[in-house]
Image 1: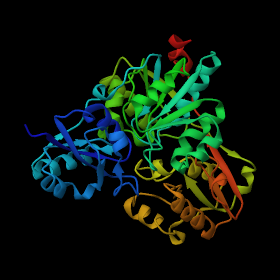
Image 2 (image 1 turned 90 degrees about the horizontal axis):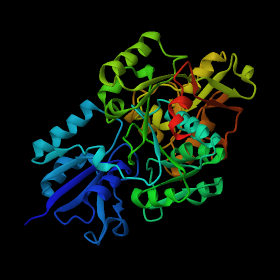
Image 3 (image 1 turned 60 degrees about the vertical axis):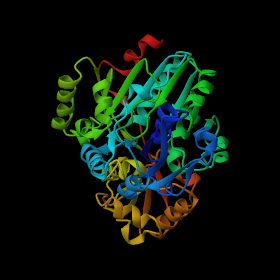
Image 4 (image 1 turned 180 degrees about the vertical axis):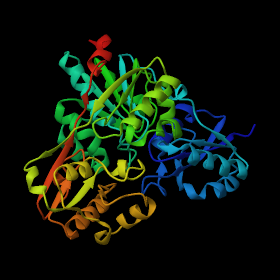
Length: 438
């Protein structure tokens, strides 16, 4: 009997988890390839034989997603599996139309099918879009659990953009571990603050192996989700963060809309800067689609570290979190808000000063406003970011990335950091919803 030929559409993360949980070592299937989207530099690699299992002695190739229709014909694909996140419903159905028109069926894997079972309690923090405030929420959850004497191990959604063999299971307990694993800016943004707070972080490629290692050190595992993906571990409590600056996206993005419907706790963030009617829209959606979920309202105040008065009247270059501004769809972030609050005379448009692949970023995401996303998916792109910042004609640089960007690039003009945190407003709050884990 012929094996079922499968093509997995991915972005170097969930796609590998889908393969590992649904297709690895199953002889009825032959995964003929992955495709790559969202993340630069992924296509052209291979999922290595060491991770793919005995059925794939040469590994599995990774192709550009825009070749999908041709791949379906050439590789005789029977089934196309959609396996990346933070995609509009329209985009998902467009991919389905291309696959079906080419002759394949189209599959969206069940969230339950992809969840691994842990031996210790699991709390998951996910979101309905990139940039909702998930990271600050997960840090607050970790801090509460640690204050109760719990050993918290954070397991982060995958970002394996380097050597997949070396990244099968990654453990981060110190900043030196971040350097040793040659983490990109995007990885550091997610790991660094957890490590600084005293949490051990695991990430990588093989989440079965990762979970086995994390369980050895944890009283509670905290799943820190990426983009708007569903948890890879079955969770005892599912917390999902929404963004009223993008009210309605909790219904129209995949698989964030799944998270919204599954959540036991829905956090409505950024209520200090969002319009009241947008906050009410999310509240109404929650009551209609997930009435059993507890609603936690939270502000996301921004703080300028250093002399905020030095911003007043100045021409400011704002550097924002990369994924939030790119595939997260936001035209601005916390840095833009902080610059306005501090009285900046002008937000300097970085586009005349872009270097290298940053030109491609702005072409791919034309919605970006006058801010610079902190792109850094490799050493070359980090250098391009540095060159762009230093070429920019501005008085001061405002860095609103979750990490201290000055540790990775040299900024040749005055620079201040912007930080942001989660502050619940009213009850219930995170401490009360986490009470069963006390």
